[in-house]
Length: 463
Image (cartoon, rainbow, N blue to C red; front, side):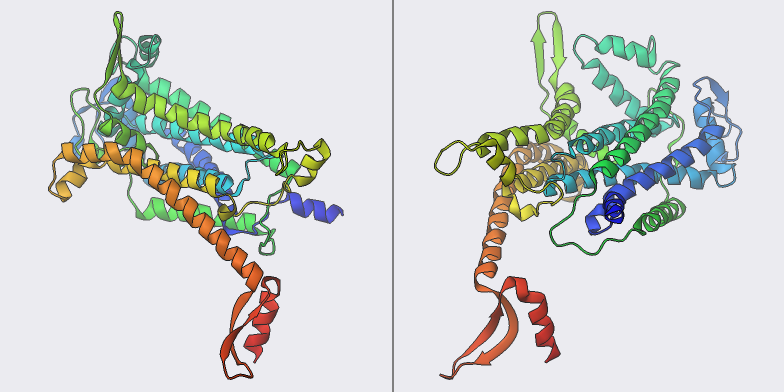
């Protein structure tokens, strides 16, 4: 009994989708290690110095201490560029792994009790990972991060009542000021501490409640955690060594009057860029105050609604199912013991086809996100297809509303069709590929019950 309990609470790699959480954990470990090394060489200052490093085209220019130290780290410290690029790639992979983990938990119902706490931890990690990425991108003080700071100014100014006060906390008396890089640096150091605490709490909850599983799963592999660690670290080193990212010497130092052409955010912030591009120029005037809805809605309202919906979904589903489950098919109230007996096993995960509405909601959300992400390239789409930017923008304004609805309907229909196919297999049996001749001369395929499929197929192949 003791060994079974230990096996249940240890990491189990019984399904390929369980690797997403391990990718996130080990990507964060790489982030922490490489970030600690970068701290030794980075100087978060905005005072101007003359660049006299090894990169000739920028030599003699006035740059900030942040930019100068980042250039020194990238081009003059042995292995510095590799560590910096591994750090950046680890941030991108971490957010991707968290998104995939949330998607897996949502589609399989792993957010239900007693694992609602783990779901909330992953939702918080997604928000913190995005915030850590944005604060980290601002630290080199290059031309690309300078453009991001302009966007931050617009977003903060659009916040009602406290926008001006928050802007003064970030930039001081004016843009760009002399305090935004130190503030971003402090936030970039504080956020990983909170994330580490959340990952530790997640590990404790996993050991307390055990791992979920599918009805039909592969045998568990208890040695998978070291393998996942090696695979993640090796993948990040290969990315950092072979794929250049954020070459700040090509961007140049930040300037409040200039911005680099073709600037794009990290992949996880692309949906905000797309939402900004397709949002109509709406404004709302209340007395002496004017709210810029064109900035407030896509950058604060949409993300706020998204994360609120993610956090509240387990509770909303539990209340809805409890309300429906209190009465039977004839409308008679059920006893508490009967409701408890009919509750699904907490360790067994759903197949996405078994919950068509929930799966359709997930696909609709992915479609909405993907369309906003594509809208961030409206200028490139217009250039490639010889169209006007205005036409492409109007197209995305309509499709981001219609597309998720179509995705919901089609996904629900596919799930119901798969359920019907499973029911037919359960009722009539599984095709074996064995053709037999009946006494009257006809031919038909031999069918076996679904639960006897493995044995029957092995017997047929033995012939």
